[in-house]
Length: 402
Image 1: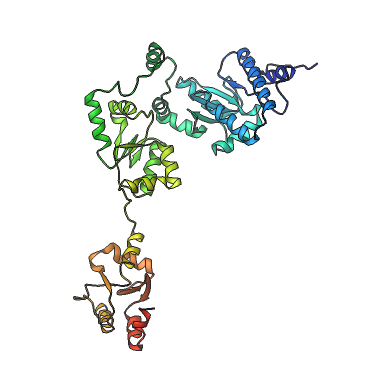
Image 2 (image 1 turned 90 degrees about the horizontal axis):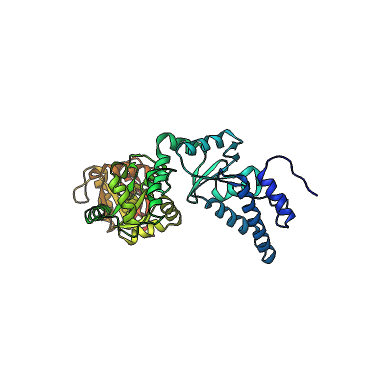
């Protein structure tokens, strides 16, 4: 006979499951608490354990795959899911308590999981989410962050906005009542858009080749996800337009219907939706973003280094000088031009007096502080003194034809 003392729903579920042949001590029950009475939760847990046990006996699965599948189910088990220490009624750490308080304050319904009761989930979720600490807050299966992020978002008002954009309504809100009145139905397609609004949205998404609908402005994003997409576009040196959806609720709500995409930011390329921050980040990491932009004829602004490389390699023999070969504007440049022409060497040239960015940039690029500078096949040969020495020794033509 086995006994159990105290009120511990998870342990009770394990004991009952063990008697039923559905649980082992190595695999504790998952205490997914929704703040409801313990009885139904325990019975449901026992049923799930028994079902899982029978499946496991019938068909063995990889431990890693099974854990990943379990974590995916847990993180998606409720639109807002909190992995914490303890349960909402009895948090066992200050950070978990703080996030619980915040969720209660914004009046959102949420599920929870006590990671202290299951070390496999506790350690597995750290790798699954690439987030080493708890609590961890998930929305629609996606990690929102830990206590610090939840607190900062709540204090700025961003958390409530994020829930709203993700289609998560607060308990007792007008939106949730409206949905209940509709019998839980969702309006199909673009039925909620007037022709005027549709035309306006079409104009906006096509107003720039790359268009970002975000919270705030590129110079001052008002949410981390919007800031991340701005950062990615800047890294790729892509020129883009933007629209602050916080300033226009008609556009904010209408675009969700128009694009069939419930959250922000939203990135459009040539009028076509690419996705939100997660998709854009994945596309950048895989190189797909650059590929898509190139295919659509959108290329990033050329960096100074790339521009210098292109200039240096624009001719096999390339001279950076003051003036042009026909009108040199310094004696040293004039001497090098005469030496090259004296050897019948064909060469390209660039007047550094016409472009200060190139003039200063190529000094650092070549680690050579003066002009003229002569390059052969992309490699610096030298300045006036070196060219004159090569010319006088008869080695100039040979050097430039190796």
